[in-house]
Length: 403
Image (cartoon, rainbow, N blue to C red; front, side, top):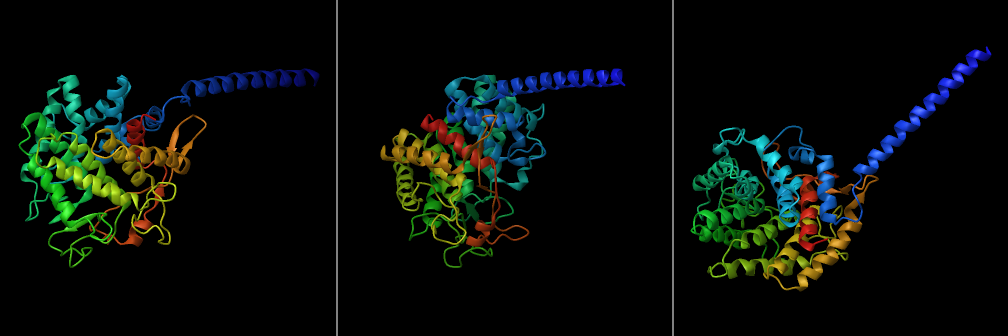
């Protein structure tokens, strides 16, 4: 009996010792992997993304690789961070994504030109720098393929790119971001700027047809034919002024202007559009300096400040001021709003990982089931933690503000 108790006690002690060793190893490992709090928000966010999504195609909860505008948006922040820090892990994260998405002959997997999906152009922006760094001719081939898509991309009768083949006669604000920075960079790098007038034309059409005359804020989309169910029968615009849509418009402007020579006749026009929207959107921010899901109706029941919209506008303010398109006062506004963003939307967990709260899920117009684009439709869109556009917007704003 005594011997049995001794043996049990002996094994219990060894079990406790074993558990302590394992526990200490786990704690030590967690401490090694913990993201330091003294890093800038930009790198803390990038490292959090690397931890949560070892493969970039996993962003936004994707369960399989996809050539996707959301990955392109987030990875554009990694490209900027690489250029700033020269840390190879940021470049490799981009390269690994692209290499998974293309085959050995230099074709995008599952890419179908006949879809004329303008979203496909956005990840193409990553290939300019990748080609310059690696000289991998597959990247150059894809840059050319995506540029060729624009040659035959369907257009409205007034010359605006359709958002997709399945959305005839429709221009969306999202599409300005997806296409124009890529188009402008290509034109300046390989065409001596010959397409800049066409690029400016896309913004002119949006400014003249999508921007609301009363608020000075843009709706999400415009149907030139006015036939789709969501279109206003007089103006062709969709029903809602969406916060993230404004963000797409402003980021499209600041990133396109980066490739526009000041000597070009349309340069001042585009700078004028940016100043106009910056002034108008400033009238619709919350007391804390953030922007709403339904941007022009802060008082609407169920409306809320939304991180992807807020982060994109902060980034556009900061970049616009740094580049001289906007006055320096917008940089100060961006700094204040960035502080509010941290208080409202950021949760840092025990591992030091940055999490973005309450990001609106992806929304759209038309399709099946039909999306009517009403205020209620946008407000009923579920929110989630770490939605890709929210993460990407915060990363870009943190890099631009050097925070």
